[in-house]
Image 1: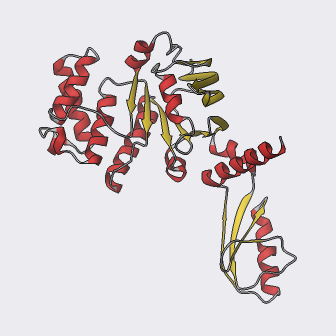
Image 2 (image 1 turned 90 degrees about the horizontal axis):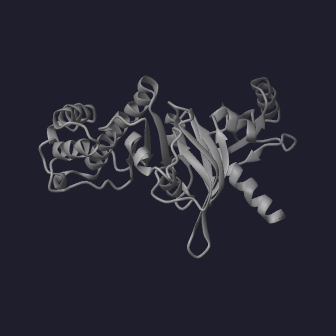
Image 3 (image 1 turned 45 degrees about the horizontal axis):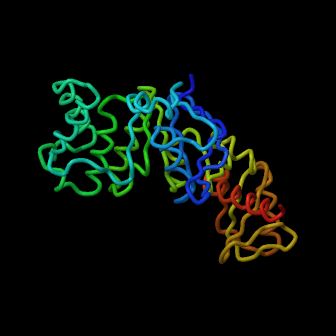
Length: 306
């Protein structure tokens, strides 16, 4: 059974605003899926649809075989949601907040407290467990929100910018927990972010979305193959022969795409033979960021043609 299955998912708001347009994808259990795009791309609408907070205008989706539109309470029982702005009770302590939400899921008070203390320890919040939420910093609230979403041991986690407002050490702690949840416990993670470099570090598969349209879905290698499967070579030199199809970027830097590493030495040799000094050569496969903007550009070109 797929963790998520979406088919022709479409959402049109009042005023004929199409927030999501014919989106189809599937997600296996235990994946850390990066749903990537700028603000307004359709990420939040997708999460709301998958959790039954709103209903699709067309198409359908299922979370572990459950239709969120007809049985939202069943999805809520197996999912945890962390929004960018955590909402909890300011007059309660961190521990009291977690115990309260645990009991809402039908967990006994004793078991809720046991799980809460373990999560507070894991997220470095134990020293603040008896402090009211109103005294928490933004980063502390974000970590407590993650603990709240995990109190009932969900099968799937929906995370919206989970490291927003966190210091580097806290962000690393959260990222390690996300990896462990997926690899050790088989928890599926649906991570919404516009930070492409961050997503490349933590996710196992990706969905790239822009203006409600899903541009591509798959692993990093699969996405690279859709754009360019070779290497992107950056060269710094004080002289570039005109006959080499290099693209000068800034200052003394230029770049060229090659299929294999074997093509790089002859290029460097030609630059040197032409009197140039080579200061640096780096060869990388396309990054997620480069893939995304390449797909955006192709979409724009397609729109202009049509």
